[in-house]
Length: 203
Image (cartoon, rainbow, N blue to C red):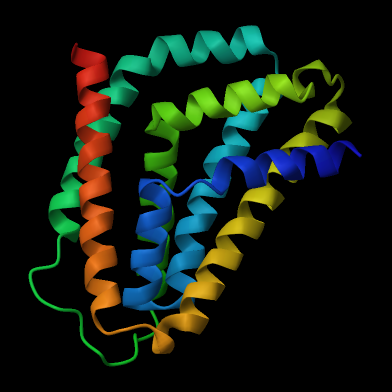
């Protein structure tokens, strides 16, 4: 029961389409299924990291967030703006099938989405709220903590795998301009969230 509750939390946190979701769709369209899964894996690892902190106790969780909120906001906001600039399409994507990404590219995608998810204030707030609302903060013991972390990771990965798989399967049925507009939307969303993150820290 505890695992299923944590699984639901992982799904609930991953499902809303934000900059990470748009980035996952963009990567899947440009580089294929495994690139999308690699991005989702980074996000799921970040969700599990927050779950581990929360399972250790909300006092410690809040103290850690308070001590790093400013550098996280600055670093995350700057990184989002950089990704928005890099990701803005200068030309229409090629209609050729995406080549299989190299292991190095998959690792870079995983690390980038991990960093973005860790630094995203919206993820931090929604995670803490859902975690407390479902009573997961009241779990005690190492076995319960491991179960919660595993459930949240599994729920997050379930969503990202389904999203990447659905986009990859539907890719050839989508109009040619779809990838171009997704890339533009992804860059605009990342730029907007980046500016919001910087304004929140500096304001």
